[in-house]
Length: 309
Image (cartoon, rainbow, N blue to C red; front, side, top):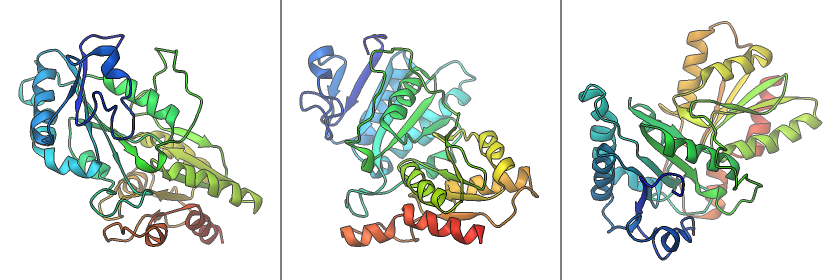
């Protein structure tokens, strides 16, 4: 916001209160009410406002408190923002960055724990990113704000409060959208993990390494557009694939990754690919049940052992 005066922030409780997770703390006092604006509880209304403001030259950042509430503003995102550039022959841009908090891990129940990245990955004109760490969140968010398209930054609630050294003073620290990262090198199996599942995959890879199985962990970072080339590069070495994410399996990111791999290199894999996801059921409230419901390092280790046996 210091770099570009056209960047404005709107959302519920983003002003003086500093955000529901203190993520906007200090911005209201630094940039004032003209650039940091609290809104009513009307997600469709203020998301539509952001789309219109973007068309006239601003770069709005929109906060939606929980990812589940994206269902309340589907029309401005899917029917307006994603399509206006196409409909008007490229004469307008819609540079909106919408960030929100989703997925499980905080025992928030079925209406506050959904992971909806696959829904929006089905819409041309949108970009969808899912950071797996504080450093990635910084670099991806900054790149999203500078992008000329509508970008959804889907933050995992279970990563809130995690600490990591980030280059706060480096204005040019950017992570390019659409580029995956290999978080750990390996030779035996490729684990593609999304969002908070990257940490689980890295934990699992340490256990597997002690057993002589070296897992390569790939973080897509951006799920749309998907960097399938980096995944294929990893698979050219390992030829075994596990995909793990917090959304359910049907029509999910894992299904898309596996489909693209098989379509591109049908003889690449040595064994059937594996998706590790929650069961096809709403997320439970009870901590004991959510622990069983979500994928974790133990389940990844078990899946890898079975694949290697």
